[in-house]
Image 1: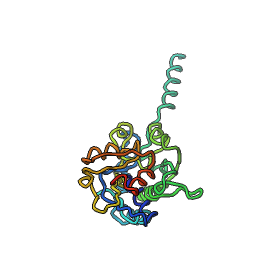
Image 2 (image 1 turned 90 degrees about the vertical axis):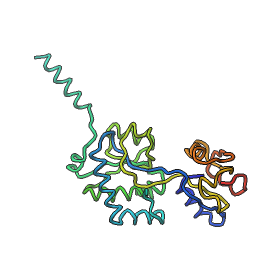
Image 3 (image 1 turned 180 degrees about the horizontal axis):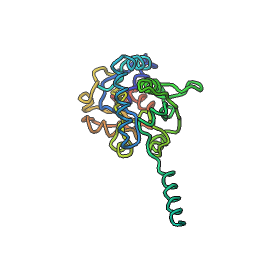
Image 4 (image 1 turned 120 degrees about the vertical axis):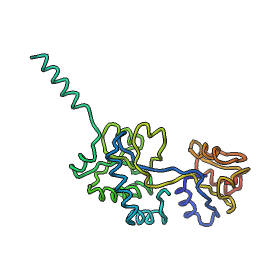
Length: 73
Length: 179
């Protein structure tokens, strides 16, 4: 049991080791942080983030680093 | 008159020391958003030579652009990031913080920009999920959140701790553990 991305990298770097990657056992939602209560900024950020997820720009960055779309479902 | 001066000075001093988090309006007026990250966590935020880069850096640049803002980056030790927010040293932190109740007491989180989690790694392709871990010996790195999480979700036979992730993986290859 290890971090999703660490596991991916290890499997990629050790293709002959025979590691089989299973499923996510528990999920961590990873986010940005703002000062407590600064909802105006958080809302503006969320709106812009959603736009990048809708227009393909987020996906392109995700593919570049991970060869998959790493957004939360 | 003197009394008034004392009060006025006191108020002025108070105003100088009372920092408010910058609102989106203030940030937009300024045209730039101050974002802090660590820069030591490839591939999420790290330095390629002297250039800060990574998945989170790229995403933040995208998002800021949508907001019509330029990013001014600040890199600092991980432990100082969220505290710096409370001190209003920067506007936002993006550094792979998982949303937790504990952290949410001290800061406000945005919507998540990616999901990660504990992944099952095994030599046997049949061992894939929590159900498959029942009755198995599982290796985790000491002190990680995987320890409690594995115990919470699976009916495992036994758990073995290793000081390093690499150690846990060696145990897997040598079949001392199942996953």
